[in-house]
Image 1 (cartoon, rainbow, N blue to C red):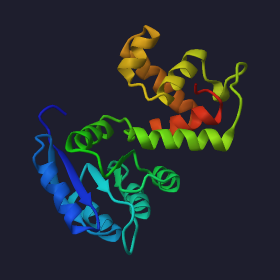
Image 2 (image 1 turned 180 degrees about the horizontal axis):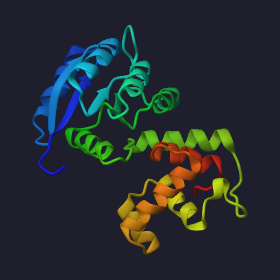
Image 3 (image 1 turned 180 degrees about the vertical axis):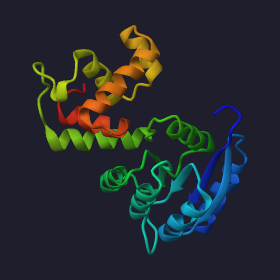
Length: 219
């Protein structure tokens, strides 16, 4: 991806917010804003027309909201990644957006560098979550499940090492940090993540956090 600019579609029903985001992103060297949309219905059409690599998607919009727009875009164009950008960090929106296929979630007080980092992260195959949002997600799952930690058999055939990697993912650790914690290479971490995602049927790190708490594997 060296030297390439990520094609981004900006979706927000508020003109001031939408135009402000475009101006902010156009200052970033690694991002090319290919277009914008004022609601979910328009976002679906523009995604098909402009073929962006990443969509910055507001959630609360008229006609078609961001969750439904995300679902339609992912169904028609699985290669397009969606990063939800919203004022609301409520649990219902988080779960709905993730279930619809969003790979990242940022609140609207995120700065340009944070948004750029999120765009780069989803393109690399990971899933950025605003720290406050991830904390709410973890708390919601933990409160809803209330299962004790399992020290015996691991679910879905996970190995002990895969469970350790999963627990560190749930703590918000990066691949490099996990490698340092476990004294293994980053390539080995990626192998463990690929294996545990395949065994557990996980799509991304956001789902991994939910899975870890559901099965009592997070600390």
